[in-house]
Structures are given as structure tokens and as C-alpha cells.
Image 1 (cartoon, one colour):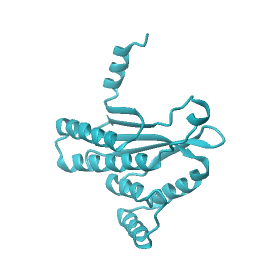
Image 2 (image 1 turned 120 degrees about the vertical axis):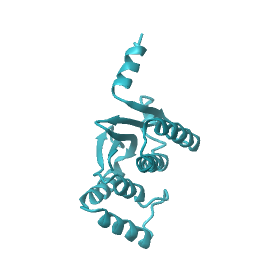
Image 3 (image 1 turned 180 degrees about the vertical axis):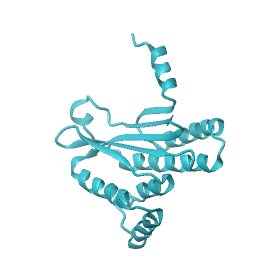
Amino acid sequence: MVDVYRLYERMQDNNIMLSFKGEVSFDLVKSVLDILEGRLEKIEDNPKVKKKVFNILVECLQNLGHHVETSGPAVDRDSHDNTALLMIWTEQGDYRVATGNYIKNENVEKLKAHIDKINSFESRQELRAFYQSILGNQQFSEKGGGGLGFIDIARKSGQKLDYNFKPVDEQYSFFSFQITIPKGA
């Protein structure tokens, strides 16, 4: 039997505010945002930081909702269940948000190039100009986004985007994303 108390203690020790693995839906997004809003009200005094964490969380959830692959490896071999991962915790006085989801290998290089470009900008003004250029050029994908969510996350957090792609099989990789939101920002 799993030692649930030990698991609880580890989550408590690591300051995990929320951990979720499952199918992303509109109802889930609303529920997660409601839960986190309540938790932030209890632990965060600074309204600017609360708003920033909440807005970044919205962007992360929207990214999951729009880009999670609904026909990932599970279709072929039931060992994965086409779900996404979301975790929010505090560490060294900062908030951290991590997401994970399957992505088709054919889309990895494009997403990697986009995030690398965002990470190459040295100032929020450069990020803002890039954001405006995408809006002005109407560079939107068939899923409705132009990568604006990642730009917003970088702008609002003031941090570089941390990510990784782990190949799963010939068709899919697992995309891991993490952002730090400084409390002092």
C-alpha cells in the first residue's frame, strides 16, 4: 500500500499548492482558477503578486487547453492516458508553475524556436514589440494562438521560460514547461 501520509508530508514540505494530472477542460480550468484564487488570498498579501500569479496561471492553463494532444501515445498503447500535468508550488520565496503535455514531434522544432526567440529578448520592451508585431501580422495558428501566451508569461514574470522536450516514441514528445514568478516583483 502507498504511504499516503508520507506523500502528504512530501507535498507539504515542498510547498505544493496544487498538483493535477488529468484531462484539461473548461470546467477544470474554472475549478483550478477558483481553488488557486482562494489559496492565493490566504497566503499572499501583495495584490500585484496575486494578480501576476493568477494571470500567468490563466495563460498556462490556456496553453494546456489549446495545445494538449488529444490523440497521443495512449491511442496506440494505453500506457499513457493523453493527459496534462499542472503543478503550482512555492520555493525560496517565489511561486513556480509547471505544466506538461504531449506534443507531436513534428511541432517540437517550431515551438522550441518560438520559446528560444522569446528567451533571446533582453527587455520587456523587446517582448512587447514582439507581441505587437504578432498581433499586427495576425500570425495565428489553426488552434487560435500565435504564441502570445508564452510572450505574456515572459513579460509578466520578467523571467526566462524554462522548458524541455522528452521524446516518447516516433510520433510524440512530452513537453515540460516551468516558470518562476518572483514574489518581490
